[in-house]
Image 1 (spheres, one colour):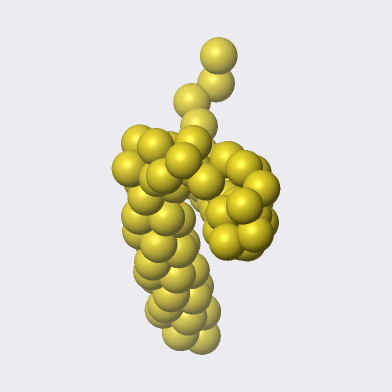
Image 2: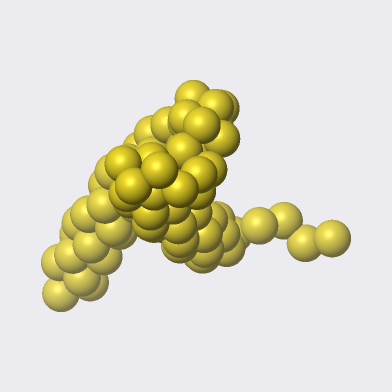
Length: 90
């Protein structure tokens, strides 16, 4: 097996963050429907959503925020490195 390059790690991080965005968005939609159902009196899984908040949704939000920051810093460093390399070649 070939070792992973920097671009492979970046691609993996981007795919992972995309999956987390969909998980967080689905959790938000579920939350909105379950709260609405709880007010109306229709059980749509609000209690289950609350039980999943700490072990699933809260870590997903934290990882998503940290990953977004890491991805931004990574892009900034790549741009800075390529700019320095261009100046050295001239």
